[in-house]
Length: 250
Ligand code: 13P
Image (tube, protein in one colour):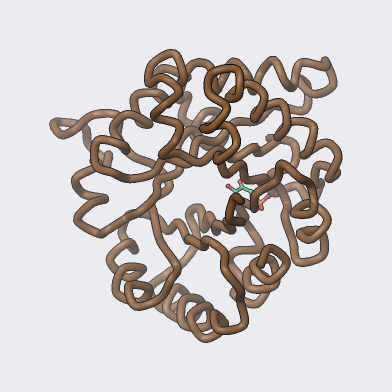
């Protein structure tokens, strides 16, 4: 049985004061939840704060990005060792905002996946199609290519310590959610692609959906057999909304 996993990607939002309020509200609400995996993703400067406020809770934390290099003259980058210093369990890799706004390519995404795992940090590999690609009927092809690019570098067994997030670009921050059927169709295609390589890895893989997940639509998305939770953006900034989404998964 796969556990449900709800992750909050704060993106470039927050401050010491805001985070403090959000994290303490989160910690207070935890007793209402049944078993599920939870994590929040702050920007790098606030990882120390996540560590100090969440260490005594079951909520994990992680970074939104990682360098593909171990160390060196890479101004502005954060290495895996630095994320380890702040006890990150997870790191988001290949978010569409990184791919589109910072021109990250499949090869870099694969290199970041490798780096994360060298430090025992679980990569959450994001994949997703644009509206144009969906309308052209190439969704599954695009997603398969994005996953295959990493598989070719690391091999299927490394996916046993990874999470995949399907985030259709047209649904991110737009208020447009994929229908539960659209999400299920892609999640099932992802699981089939993994199963061709290894049945066990495919069956155990947590595949999260991301894109305008809100308290009002979370339950129907989570009811799909291949949807194992959500990577939540906007709604994760409101502790009450995030807890509602967690409740829908628990
Ligand atoms: P929204 O929930 O704001 O659409 O963002 C989704 C996302 O990009 C999470 O990584």
